[in-house]
Image (cartoon, protein in one colour):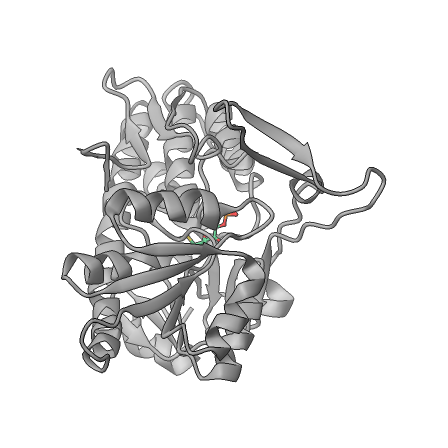
Length: 366
Ligand code: MRU
């Protein structure tokens, strides 16, 4: 997507070829800053501290992290250390393990002297592939929005709702949940997006709103608690969210609060779709609630808020009384029965084993 008129990805090899650069997402929307990752530890820190975040981008950064490790030490022990370090950064998004396993499968076959170059080639491949998958999701999801637009009286907009940030900032480019939205907007359909702020880290208010504003997509930021009310009032036509891990049976793990939106959508007959690129499908799991590890993050993300003061400086303030405990589960599970459909790069399918099998006959036997 473009930033200040320039096509920009969230991660790219540095011009000197010696490092990787990322957008520091902890600084958005108040500052656009890039950070150089030159070592394995830089990459692990960027994921852990959420300078990069979003399932596909976590996977892409991990692939680059393996290159950063292997270029200085291509030994098996260095590879195993790098893999373990990256795998421990964030537990929920399966894209992390997917990317690490994909690099391992290719790289360990190579002679030591060629491992660094092979890892670099794969990191580039994973990034380019991510963009292609997301474009596929855009093409697959566009007709869903088009069908709603076709039944609207002239001049009425299609109201979408999304949670967290499953936009281009959460991927290498284009985004997953936002891909059909950008495709619809670019095709001239009158879309408007309700953006859940997504406490505690506010990825909706900070990141999704910034993206949509940049691309000129009409949107309105709402508090997380407003979605159910808007659905009851007929002001939401379609929900599209992302996923950090979807089981082979269609259970969806995504940012905390997604489940409540799915319940409200179900109660109000609002279609609830999940944009699920294949690397975020965990073909080994059948029961999301029991089998997906839910990341617990620091209580401070709940007790404190960061924002911009009128003088432009950014500061952090407490919002709870000192001494109150806070809990911070970062993801929840939406059972497959609440999901209208999965939008994948191969098309849209029901959130069921047979639905997924129909699109991925090559994977679903796992
Ligand atoms: O904690 P985050 O910001 O990494 O969580 C991001 C989400 O929950 C996204 O919806 C998900 O990763 C899909 S991104 C295409």
